Image (cartoon, rainbow, N blue to C red; front, side, top):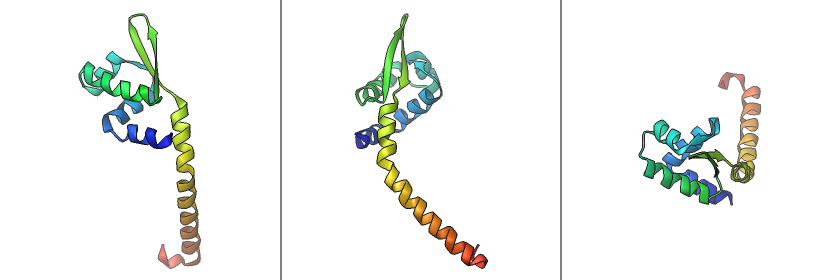
Length: 105
């Protein structure tokens, strides 16, 4: 559910992990170096992200490689769609109003 994903991503450290994984798959050691945090702290956040389905993990030799899973983000996008449409309509009305009243620009 998107709200669960939203709750999981509300934590700033988990958002930083997601931003890193958005760019590339990473091992725990790479995330520790990137975030400047202890391995147990990073692992704790990865466990929460994994339990929520936001990330998945695969073994690679002695490492565990994490990557983002698209499903929760697609659900979040679908949940946000009506709000984007609401703002889009509001901004369209503002643009129309400003076009009719050029001195307001």
